[in-house]
Image 1 (cartoon, protein in one colour):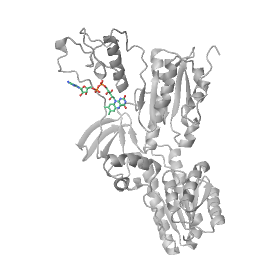
Image 2 (cartoon, protein in one colour):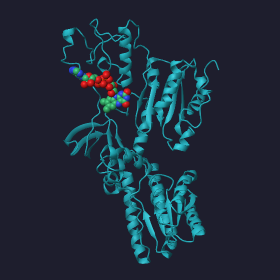
Image 3 (cartoon, helix red, strand yellow):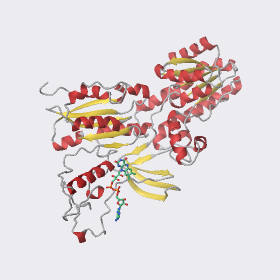
Image 4 (cartoon, helix red, strand yellow):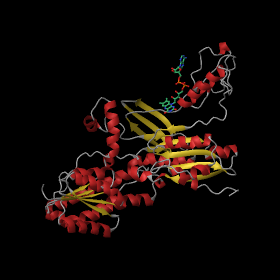
Length: 485
Ligand SMILES: Cc1cc2nc3c(=O)[nH]c(=O)nc-3n(C[C@H](O)[C@H](O)[C@H](O)COP(=O)(O)OP(=O)(O)OC[C@H]3O[C@@H](n4cnc5c(N)ncnc54)[C@H](O)[C@@H]3O)c2cc1C
């Protein structure tokens, strides 16, 4: 292999990591730069497995000193630089109108200033090796939309800067952009494509070529008429989910009024929306309306049987699920039960046992739920909002998922756990989690709630390491002491 050296910034994760691993096939040395040194370990292992000599550089490239150190370390170790691939720097994907000056500055700092500084510092070495500079920009610059406006503006600046460097390069003999890594497969995209491709009758390779245009999920806008996403949830839960979705590049417009829809879903749609007192047009290929479900109870002869409905059209039932007509029972969504499969299934068990002479009821049953987002959201029992409405005194404990040790291994650090414990007793009254495996962790808490275990039993339990459930010990350690303690 030709002796050649590439520097990749932002190499600890995502596209930077994938690029570094890919370049390891063509370069004898790959310098991996990122802020988080521990996260570079894995990339370094893969670079080595692909035949290149890795050099890990844990640096914060926002400072000039760090950029100088990176160039020096590279030259000390390898004596040359043949390619500089600059990927580092996430620009917050926040609506231009909502973005603070600090967020804007943060986006510019590493992605733009950092790229310029490093290119200039490495210039002489690149010139000597007739090397290449790749300043990575996202495609948002080509098609700026409000949610990506900041990203787009900074990326457009990077493109302009790369062109200006290219001008210099051509004069001075640096072939700017001669090493283009090409499409790279990140972990997230690989996992997604492995599920998506066979479901659409394609191999991953075929689907990758068509992604994202054929998959059609390249840009998502959520329009919510209310003031927060997931209106039933506590504000901190909704805000965290919103933050995670925005981090994925999803644009969220709250208090959004849809004024007009034109086109046909699947072919092309154009929506006129008023949000934050501004009217704007949102264009897309598909439109999904998820505005809730209504009971399908009209016109099926219920009134002839004397079965009465409530004001919302649900069949009126008592706690035993008996309707207003003796001998007629109703279960599931049409009877106004929580809209989950497990609630309907439990309704069935109640009716089955009552038909056999039992005395089962829907009263006080704990109905959990899980939203299978990524990461998932799970909830059981009281929320803070419900506790307040019902006048139930609670102690609230929270724990960020990043404090759960397993997340260090799985890199799934987003979200938090939240527990509600009685203000003056030891009962666990509610649990919410946003995080990987939230539904499974919730089942453990639900079991404790059903057994009416005092929260201290979970706090002091010896739970296996490293599991997500292990975080429950730390979570319940954060409960403030009660009056008796
Ligand atoms: C996209 C989607 C995803 C979901 N994901 C989840 C999930 O992950 N977890 C979860 O717990 N829940 C989930 N749910 C909710 C769950 O599917 C429902 O809560 C559950 O199916 C309700 O059960 P049910 O028996 O009350 O009603 P249904 O399952 O809707 O059954 C009602 C049946 O009655 C039939 N019917 C309606 N009207 C008539 C009529 N006039 N004559 C004869 N038959 C009629 C319908 O065709 C249907 O077969 C999801 C729902 C949707 C739409």
